[in-house]
Length: 355
Image (cartoon, rainbow, N blue to C red; front, side, top):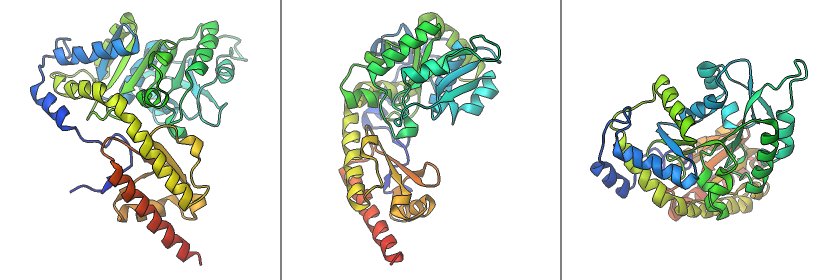
């Protein structure tokens, strides 16, 4: 039995579509470790083609893709990787980087929407004051920006960041876990971003709706080295074409469909603004996420989550006073209506308690 009637905890909770299940059942497979799984190879070739890169590597998770990508450029301890303070690599993945590669981060903030800017890149890439040497091996950017509600890194802004990084002689890796959400929201070609980075990853298992997997893309020589690191990290798998087949369906069918997720997120946000003015920043709702400020509601996040769950709505906390909801392929119009009704009931009860 499903835990929630509408699950808005993340876009990772989706289940394979009938088309994905059919593709998985019929997938031609080989041994991905040896590089002869034809379905995995097709997925990698398609990912490289779309992003304008020479090669790609299909791996199990977004964290694995990021960690391999970061290590390609920052292979030794004692130097730094630079990124925005809320970036996934420097928060959720921080200890992973330390354990796997001895990597530390230099972070800062320049924008209320969390994106990397040229000004921030210039500060982060400055030589170390004490040693008077360049200590940053890599600049990481994120798109969309998860910690700030799925906001979008402007492609023009990334071009400016690229110029700063090039001047400093530092490569750029993009955490594009939800890159295709940014593409769908803006209508721009993905290469408006990917042409300005050296390597990038994107998740198949988030907005695109596949059950598992992410892809790391970049120059052929770096992806060759990425395969070696992938094996060292225990990531190599065998007949992975069964999973890659679903990824191919997601990549071809999921990209344009994501605009529906964005429309539903906006509908949910607008309803919450009406029910609880000040609870949502409308400018933050750029893709498929809605962040709710629980202080504007008057209840702690934990209490709200418990009451929403009792009404069949799943969400997650982002700190003690913020709740995150994420729309995805398994949330339809009826699900959004159910979520709005649940919020209406919870807020009505909260208002009665404060009288």
